[in-house]
Image (cartoon, rainbow, N blue to C red; front, side, top):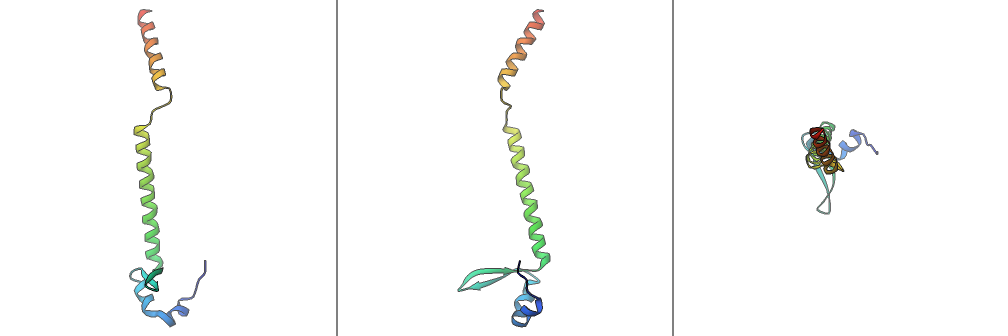
Length: 91
């Protein structure tokens, strides 16, 4: 990852850096958002939130899969158990 010293950039755009300490700042090219600058703290909060959301989604998907899944051969297994139970009763 490329890096520049704050001094190098601050000499040119100190107002943008001051604002980036408070909230993310969009850098525009021809009226289109091109880059975002933000503080390390804001970036880390964003990364942590994303990780939490990913974990929540994976957890929800696992719960859905568990609640809707069936073992292969469940019907056959259940039928065999019923037959064994009948044999046991008739003994």
